[in-house]
Amino acid sequence: MSELKDLLAIADRVAAEASAALIAHRREWGVIAEEQGREVKIDADKRAEEIILKRLEEASPFSVISEEAGWVRAAQRGERYVWAVDPLDGSVNYLRNYPHCAVSIALLDQGQPVLGVVDCFALGERFTGIAGEGAWLNGRPMRVSDIDAPSSGILQTGVPSRASEDSMRLFEARLKTWRKVRMIGSAASALAYVAAGRAEAYRESGSMIWDVAAGCALVKAAGGEFRIDAVGLDQPLEVAAGNGRVALPD
Image 1: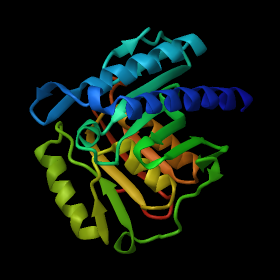
Image 2 (image 1 turned 90 degrees about the horizontal axis):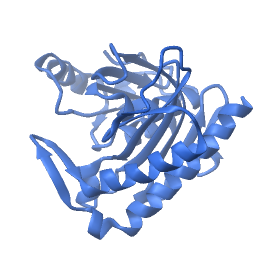
Image 3 (image 1 turned 60 degrees about the vertical axis):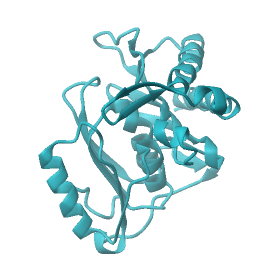
């Protein structure tokens, strides 16, 4: 596991640098660069990504899949490790000064998230973890909650722009099942909150691997579980995560 600890240290350091830049340059980077339907791209996405990709390239030889750039040194057949990067998860939140946004960096081992960093920089909270080793919030151990019934629990979810009519019907059913349903506009942050015991589960349709990989790794590292259904790392996916006590949401 020493290799994964070294790689987590890299991800932690890179996330911290990108987060510091996002804070320092909020005024000039908080500018809309592109709008496609409900999707908004702002200068900060690209700027933070440039920092992260440069630092990861300097520190490791692995391929990267990132929200803005797509594949960087596309993974070769048999390649074990791939970085999955969302340089700014919650772009509209960042634009509107809503605090639920994050830098998200994960390492995939043969496609499965095994370590993650979710830096919720506006709130001063950095979540880190390695599956099988542990998870930490600002360096202090964290665990998933002990709540074992949806009727007593909180579900974190969202409605991505890629959501289908079927997924919206399931979304309506979830509203009736859980005590509370939260939508905060950042998948990475929402999953980190499950890992920290602030919510019991997460469910979303149409996300991409860079949206959820770090958060899923955190949930696993904190004692929970996740399920990712996808045909490829660059295709929309179905993701569910939970504390291991409530059933994963459909």
